[in-house]
Length: 212
Ligand code: AMP
Image (cartoon, rainbow, N blue to C red; front, side):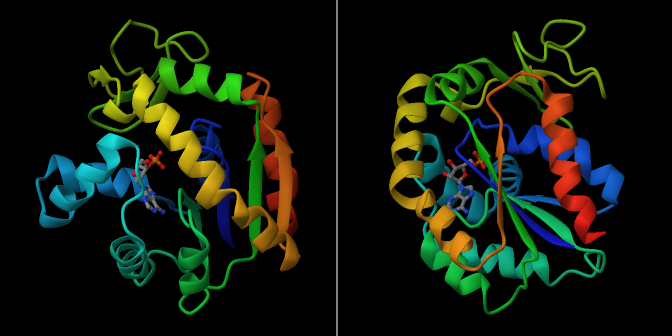
């Protein structure tokens, strides 16, 4: 079962993936996480990507496509995967058609005000990348990850200027993928405006259960 989670930054793709990946026992592939890991480890890829990411721009297609192609060639994916944050442009989706077969695209929809509120309050664990929110998903102890006790931080691109740019980029370059996958007949949309993560996850599971 090869799945894409589509939607604006901050719609909650990472949170929902975290919740469903164990049920289906398939890896979560987040291009944002891979870039952040490379930035942390100061690799060549990380150095190149950082300039774009911090400003809220997309990393160039060629770099991103090669990175995903490489990840999808690994041998832990025989049961499938959830792609979170890829593709983000039509050229990425077209290129992926040559090296991956996608079963279902789940498109999450939320109001812009909800998205801005989620992004600006988001906090991430430095160690295990678990996602929290100062109001919606607060950690038990402020600034500390419930799962691994790691330190929580705010991503540079979750600050106001970068958020604005990321939402513009989403509208211009990523939203057209909704029509692209609708035409292929593999798109399902889910309302993700509510803070009731359990009920959103249940709706995701209803869709994914058809592919088990
Ligand atoms: P995310 O964690 O998914 O919000 O991604 C963080 C940042 O990584 C994005 O704002 C982009 O700068 C970059 N990025 C992640 N995925 C892609 C992609 N598919 N194409 C280009 N840039 C990406």
